[in-house]
Length: 333
Image (tube, rainbow, N blue to C red; front, side):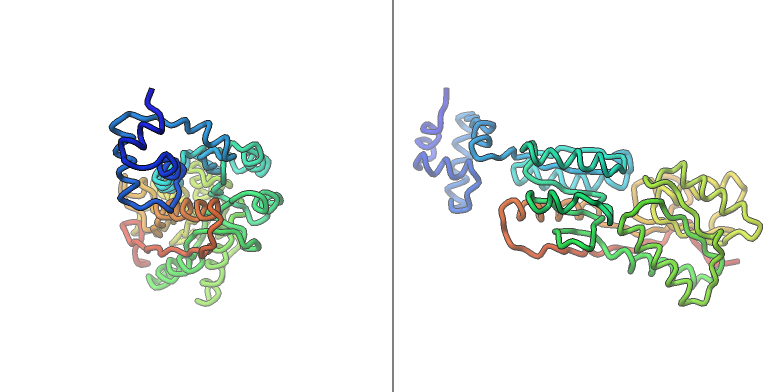
């Protein structure tokens, strides 16, 4: 059986050097590391990673806590996290909470029993009662959603600014009957997008009837989005534009409009948020805010790795977004 001494001999280095390479030490020169890796591959050396991690109290696993793994919005974020984790020598464990704070806490317990070295939260609620309890003891990063009352590392876009840009566009098209479909949850993105909606309407001198603010379920499901849209579009004085806080809700709105015989965008403008793949799967393509989902995941993993390594790095990252105008929006007629 090949052992670490054989690898050292093949690479013409010491056993200690091979050990430092295997333990991800930065003190080994790039050329030397490459020689060691080449020797490992040539000899088919398989280090006992589990034993090594146990001695170092490491699992080499990171925990991803997500509220709804079936939501297409999270797919590219998870890819970004997973790819970056793999490049850093980590595997990822996904824990689905269904939006439950109790389930979120259950997931975080994995940090206590050393099943994971750190956690990335994809949907931190602004009122999470146990977040700091774990973040004070273990590496924790917030991705996309965050609790702004904490100083934990996080990566996101500027949701308020992005929503304000969409609403400014709707007003510029001549729309005054602008409704919104929000969600019943306590995520920072939900709060900021609603704040932007109300501010934009006020700044434009547009009075918003209470009936123009509709709510879908907390998980942004297509079904609840369609149900909320049906209420809006069945109003006697129905809106001419609907600002949806997620693409899934926007797709539900398009479906409701088509069933009611309302033409898009001739009679109704619909906008979404996130730019999931589904927005261009059938016509009309959805006007939306494109979030850099893959990059959000990638940056979150880098922040978590820095946290695990106890590096002091900038820990509040705001990534750029793109407002994409497509077929579902048009001027008031």
